[in-house]
Length: 405
Image (cartoon, rainbow, N blue to C red):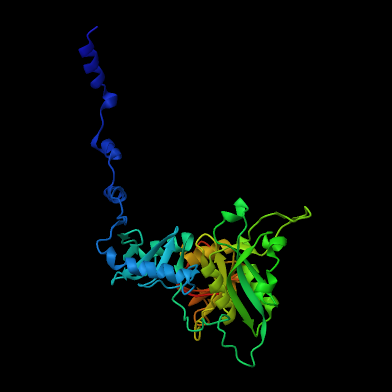
């Protein structure tokens, strides 16, 4: 058998002959080639790199941490509508960063429904990056916090001030104690303090501490004492214990008679946080905060803000939508709201022009969206860029988020 002849006969088989038209079936169209080439090119990804002038920023990070410890600054969750500006501090995954600069060409992008562009972010570990503004926003909202602006501290003379006026009424004393117990579990616990209240002097109140379960059956040391002036001491006690309930120290103590007790007024919290909370109770702002034990600082509650948007002269269409779609629209992930045109909704979405007798789509300037039917339901006002009709479906093309309640 001649192998060469067999191969030659095989290669000359008419079945393998292809016309130019048939070969063209395997060609990739030019427009598809461009798409493939575009996808093959990796998008620019911001990478952290050493910050050459970090020595200029290290002091401001140290100051920001100090202000957090002292309660001058606090943590807050970034809201969906809150603007990010240069000069702000953020914490993402436990690391602080400073937004040093926003690109001067930063502008509104319909795709992300917000301003977007490059930034210069300085990190406290000595690195920097030029991540996109919307990437920064997403990271902060999902895994971080924004630091609030410094608060005024001129009011901080509070209860330790001995200059009590004649018409002031001292209703009690707040005391902060440190245990001198030899119990290994108690002795090893850092930032363990008892926060208590007394209508008599603190010294008198703790005179028998070594024999009382509430003091862990051991002597105690007075760390701080505050006079409660012109306030209901029971309300004061309730506020401070509710705030620190998340870090309540769990321990069982046995008294001299062998009875087991679970003291409730011991908390694992830094002293400066206790002092900051006392000041915020005084000025009435404590209800706006919670305690974040991981970051060991106060966190401002994410209270929804009502933005008063002037809708005078605007045509508004009110719709009720599901929570999942509402969130997608607010985040900019859903840019078209669809409504089926039915006999019962003809007058809502369309109208008949008396001039020619034809039916047309109603044009609205914005959609007022509601979630559910409860009194405190979520609401948003969203700009309508265009309205189209396709196979029985009215399509509202959405623009900017004008209001979030």
